[in-house]
Length: 131
Image 1 (cartoon, rainbow, N blue to C red):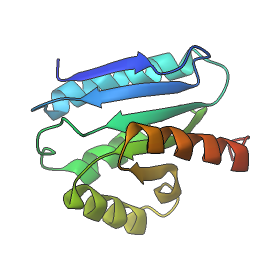
Image 2: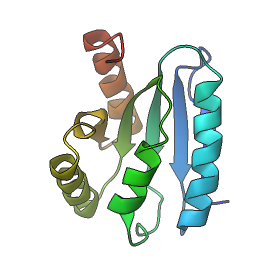
Image 3: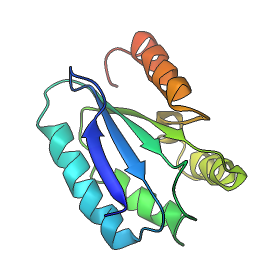
Image 4: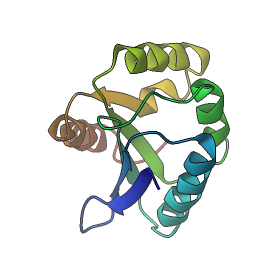
C-alpha cells in the first residue's frame, strides 16, 4: 500500500501519514478508515502529519475527496500539518481554505517533518482544547 499510518509519538497524540509513489482514492479511503479508527480509539486530541514528499502526483478530485473525508472526521481531530515541496499543494490548500473557511485553519503547510512538528506544538499551545 502506498499510504501508511503510524503513531508519531509514544503518547499517541500525533498520527503520521506517509504517502509514497502513486496512490488512488480507494487506497486513500482505506487509509482514512484506519486513520479515523486510530483517532477514535484515543480520548484526547490527535493531530496528523501528512507527508507528501515522496508522493506521486495527487489524483484528480483532491478537493472533493478531502471535503468528503472532513464530513466523517473524528471529534478529537486537531490539525493536519502537510509536509510537501509542491507549489500545486500550496495552490490546492489555498483554494480549499477559501471554499471551506471553517476547515482551512486546520490544514497547515510545512516544508519538513521538523517544521510540521513545530507547527503542531505551536497549535497545541495556542489551542489546547478543540473548538
